[in-house]
Length: 257
Image (cartoon, rainbow, N blue to C red; front, side, top):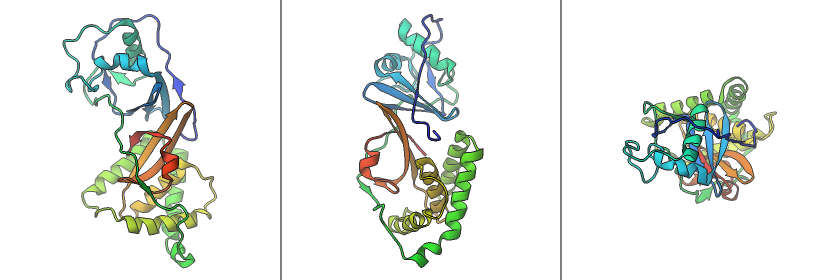
């Protein structure tokens, strides 16, 4: 994730041993469907995997929660064919799937409606207005730098998700106009922070900066498969907050935090 713009292709064994024919998606795994591949994000290992679309969908009837199957798992179905079983075994070995229902979730792609609006990236505020937010900006930027330098990706995601969950009930309805002003200040001050512009850092720092003002938008991760590229941005409802619609439209969402 940290600047990695390539995904691993899964190695599928030729010989398979017969395992249970219901597979469960692990909680730390997220899916999205591209034209010719399914892309898998493993948050624990900070890694993407690409699986041929037809191969992955051949395993679908034996995946818990797969569209068109019962929510409680796949019971009383025929034994999976060898190719599907080989893929299931490879995904078990990679700890993408599990044989156990505990802590499992439905094997379905991340659902996020396409954005319809975006804040103007050229928004500006008077100089004195930006510097009024300087302390919060530099604290947020320093925290994001420290997290990316010292913490595993899984820990960062857990922190952002937990903060949003803790404040979700007490937070006021999202004030888009207030966010617009704060993001304009963030963008103006960003010129003074000595770090290259990268989507992961800039989105994480912006999330922390907005959280200091009681605003908790979503952190969206998206991918393209052909060629592979990963990207992330901040979004509230159908409005992109730190990118353009044209840019994010090229990516299929795979995780929302």
